[in-house]
Amino acid sequence: METGHSVAINVVNLWCAPFDQPASDGLRGYAVTLLQPVAGHCRQRPIHVSYHVSEDRLYSAPLNRIGDFEFDDDVAEVFPDMIRRSVPGYASMLSLIGQCAETYAAPNTNVYDLGCSLGASTFAVQQHAPVGCHVHAVDNSAAMVARLRQTVAQQHCTGAQQHCTGALIEVHEADIRQTDIRNASLVVLNLTLQFLPPDERDSFIDRIADGVLSGGAILLSEKISFADPAQHQLMTTLHHDFKRSHGYSDLEIAQKRTAIENRLVPETLDTHVERLGEAGFSTVCPWFQCFNFASVLAVK
Ligand code: GEK
Image 1 (cartoon, rainbow, N blue to C red):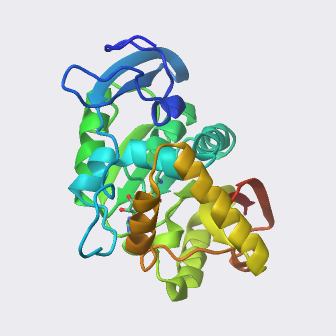
Image 2 (image 1 turned 60 degrees about the vertical axis):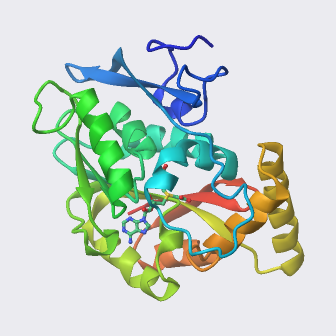
Image 3 (image 1 turned 90 degrees about the vertical axis):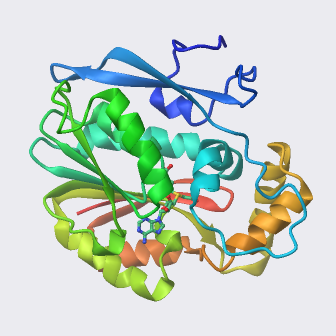
């Protein structure tokens, strides 16, 4: 892969494909190729935005005190590298989000990407969403939102900058629990529900379901737990092996685990499927699982 501003990788790959060579500033680089919709036909004209993302070394040195994991500036800086090396199947999840947007995102409706981080899912949606569809990217991390706003501005695809003829992206710094969901053809929760307190999840999903149009969908990806202790242990071991094979040391894995255990509370796949059914989604279909990560498509 060449370095520079015109590396032709698409928006799904961009979160997964670091440059092979370090950039001139010594940081590992990511090529960001955004595909500008042209006159309603998405994916016709690639535009290129480049920026650099540091390698995730946040837990590589021994820490005296391991605080709770926060989506702060340090995390936002390394986030694409962190998620690529931590979530098995992340690229597949993004790819299906794009495909679902093609199927479900409708003109004159809203699509919500709740817990958007740096916008990987947002851009996967936007590439496939039709003209007249509003893509709302919501996150309560100021560090994530600031970076995403910058990327969106470079892409010239906000409502304020009318160069874009496809789906418009609106970025909101907000708590997803306070976000009004209405006229939604698609809601994406890609690895976000797991960060809400478990006792708030039922009512949160109920509220989303109320805002989804008939025939609309929710796409939920989560880290999952297993009711069977042997299965849970096996999948946890394989997940840690995955992280090790992507360059994390045992110390990094252990310290990150301590930091995140109070913040990320996984539930079983059955719990998610039942909750979505009870919220009023008529077809609830797990479509993907890779070790202890799974994704469910639910259609209203
Ligand atoms: C992706 N979807 O790349 N309100 C708003 N945002 C929240 C809240 C909340 N209550 N709680 C957590 N977040 C992305 C990846 S990351 C997943 C999502 C991960 C946000 C939080 O700030 C973070 O940006 C995101 O949810 C979770 O497709 O780090 O494992």
